[in-house]
Image 1 (tube, one colour):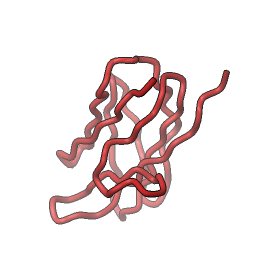
Image 2 (cartoon, rainbow, N blue to C red):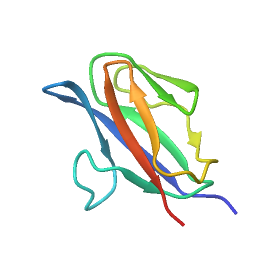
Image 3 (tube, helix red, strand yellow):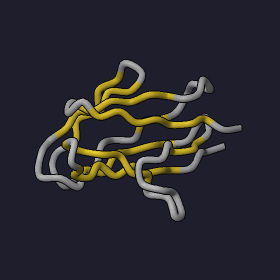
Length: 95
């Protein structure tokens, strides 16, 4: 069975960038809640290119574009991801 698709916005912040899940009602900076099999992409809403590192994978994202999809394969929670600008985010894997 196919999972859901999610997007995490990369937005400018005082510290460089911040991660905001593109989910109705989700507070800025909150972890994305997703399940094994779900696909996640990062939508860069800045003028700079970034590199997202998640579970040993590097996803390049140009300014004003999105990464390729990352499939959640690990049920261990949280999954930590980082950005080359010293920013960190989390995905909580839920049943």
